[in-house]
Structure formats: structure tokens, C-alpha cells
Image (cartoon, rainbow, N blue to C red; front, top):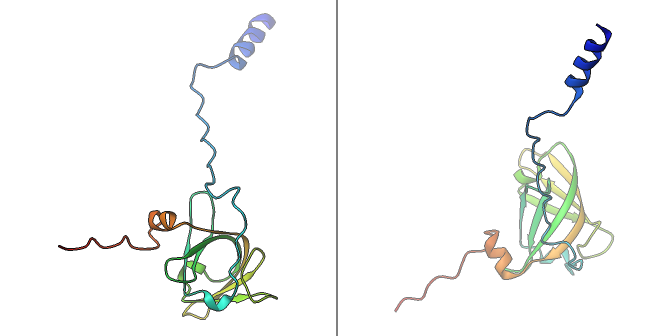
Length: 142
């Protein structure tokens, strides 16, 4: 009886025929390896868009001049959600915006989110089009 019980336990602990779940492939960051960007003056920021992306929890896109966009990853704290913000206020010791710049996002409900930029890179016009930050040029008539 001792032998049969040992064989039963060994059979129960042996390899199973159930398929193992496939691991998800690692998400490749297309912006990795790019040099850090800097916006020379915070007054140049004309527009911003905050999104959640698959690989990153919070991403901000900043437009400086017409169709010139920057992408920043950030860490946030506070009661508000930066995606609901209507205004953006950079808080830094310098005049510009770069890595480690603190951004304050204010909502209409007077809630704020305080976020710190972890990275900032510039986008090409093609990337801005792919992300639907800018509209494609209109076809000429005639």
C-alpha cells in the first residue's frame, strides 16, 4: 500500500499534458534610444494632449509651434486625472521644459494632477500624423 500511494503521488506531480499559456511578447518602445528633447520656453506650448497607452500609463503630447509635437512620459499624483485637464502649467527652475519638469494639470472641477516628466522626445511629422495629433493635408482641387 505504501508503494501504490507513492506511485499515485508521483503520477500526480508528473508532467501534465495541458498546454502552457504563451507569454506576451515584450512591447518595443519606438522612442527608446532617442536623445532627450527640450522645449526652450514654456510659453511656446500651444496645445497638449494626455493619453494612456499600452506600454505607458500616462503620456503627454505637447505642441509648440504649428505641428511641432513632443512626447513625454510622466509619473502623476493628485486627485485629478490629467486627461480631463483644461489647462497646463509647467513648474520648473528654468524657463524651458525637459526631463524632470513638473507639470500641473488643472480641471474645471478645480482638481489638479501634479506630474513629473520622466522623458521628453521630439516627434516627426509622420509620427504626429500616425498618432492623429495633426490632420493630413487636404487634397488640392482642380
